Length: 430
Image (cartoon, rainbow, N blue to C red; front, side):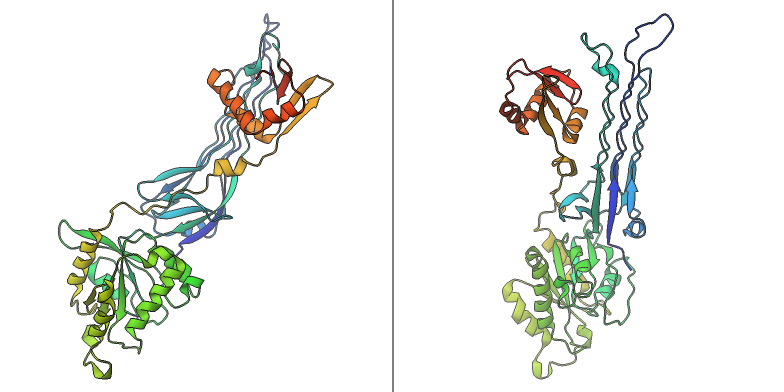
């Protein structure tokens, strides 16, 4: 089975903890703090591999984790950074948050490499916290925690033109005639199971990518059969060639088939039904006379050409009419914006995963100081340099935006009072 979906769990590396130590050497009785910084945790990175065309690698293994950063050491030695983990995916893979379904990244349109989860920053060693009034700090910053997320990988075929229609109407045969693709072709009533891509070369300068989207059935938009798995591959296409059995060799009405498939497209995504369409009336070599129902080609033209949808008679078996159909598709593509269809990011892991981490604001009567602490505060301090003016202004803005300043004022803080954030103390001023 063609693997075009996978659900996996990814985890970035934890940052290494900062180290607490003091220089102890002969003839250096007060060497001071020398604890080193922790190493950064490894990132989780997704990268396009042009040699892949399925997500099979993720069907049997579900958990992928980057390496943790090492803890800092004495003599101001920093810990080793954790190794990143790089997950290879085919072009066209959309990465979604499994819980909300929102898009994290679309690996197409030139986006060949993206960091999805960042590793935690390493904690600062105790030598960073030495001050004239605290020359022997016994505190080092812990490393930032790792981040874990369940993601859904969806492969959406990247093609300019998509072939749609009921099973056994000749899509695979057409694709094999006009491209170098070699789909499996047989007289099966269920459908081809694998989406097939091919390149149509009209001449030395003109061409496009075409995809045989596996045959749809009524109810596909509700997940009947393999509907959802196939419908998602139409989302990137710009033009739809709707293939019907004009000869009704299996007793189906081609007009009813077109309306039925269009209903499924609209039910799945209203924008799909609005894409430009061309009707390929296939199997004209099997039309012998109009009979009581009249000429089927004329019936198709009378029904759909007033709606702006052109009908092209073809025979995928003999090749009759194929080039007229393909040039019509190419001409239609020239009227459409050639920018690739890329899904915009809707879910930002860094914000979502750590936005609800708790913090507390309290007053320590014994030490006569106000205390702010919690995982969210520790994480913020991990990427803020309080020694710089810019970093300290960012820190103040963070406290105000999170409502921490308001909570301090509600507790009665006054200018000049001592406020401790984790193990860092400062005087409060508005």
